[in-house]
Image (cartoon, rainbow, N blue to C red; front, side):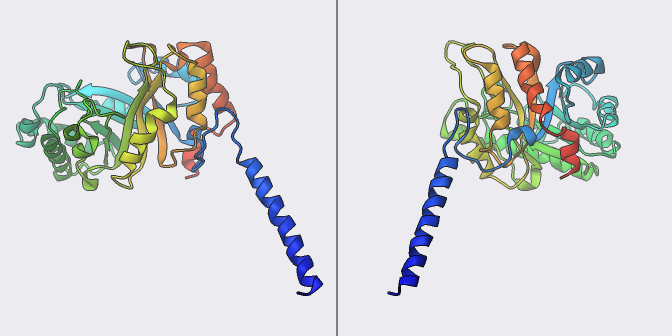
Length: 321
């Protein structure tokens, strides 16, 4: 072997060794970082909220946004099947240049009766009203269907049939501006094969947005414990993303103050990079089973505010997509 070739080999070895050591140093995680850096931080996703009463009383909404120094791009509200479509509320959301997300709950309505057409007059009325909006409206039906606290839980085949019937009615009425959001709970309750979330999936033709609902209950209940954000969503994320290529939202997410540091939990959520398919995070902002609100403490509010102080607004991000 010539000395020149040998010298080249030695130099190459030194360079490779330097690169390996440099990359190895970069791979060392600091506390709080996630090891799976597949995408941008979740804090760069569209940020929305359900703010109790905020859709009908915008002062409540604006007060929170002022404290947060950030606007919610998605405004979420709940309604039941006993009420007509609220065109005024949706128009108000659109006038604010926000995205309307409606959770439409068929509480107490038998699934078989829905698929058999017994509620078609009501469905057609809703479809006609939504059609007149002239903008995209996101509607979430049968949320958390794999949870035994809902009245539409327990019979996946009947739920799929009811879901498909509703979508078909809207299509017949020409309400093509609806985007249907399918949103199971992060855990199957009960955790049986017959109750797996996948069994409730009505198919890609009937679902425009995949979603997940997940909460950190902390120590608010005797049978719950504090759980990090990534632990709550890792497995359900893998299951849901296997179902289709639609956009993925966190339709309901929040943390309690009990059992850990809520501000740190929020920081871990916003800085998490392990879920590249998630492009919207919608916070459940109500003092209900526990105080889920962003403003439940000064530290919690600051965690959101400080993050968004250093990042573009959601409107800017949406416009750049």
